[in-house]
Image (cartoon, rainbow, N blue to C red):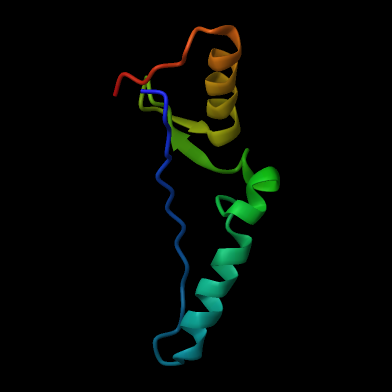
Length: 81
């Protein structure tokens, strides 16, 4: 109940008639997607995750604040879903 892993989806598009475009698109997605590790600081407010209590979409940074605040206060933010 105290371990979180948020599922992320990042779509990228390529031209099937130009095979190198898939590598270019996936490489671009790997470096520019807000949910990628290198972009976490800049992209947290753009990335949505499901709140583990309500299931509603919420910004990842807002959800992490709830989790960290729960740990800091000793009142854990436990998931119900």
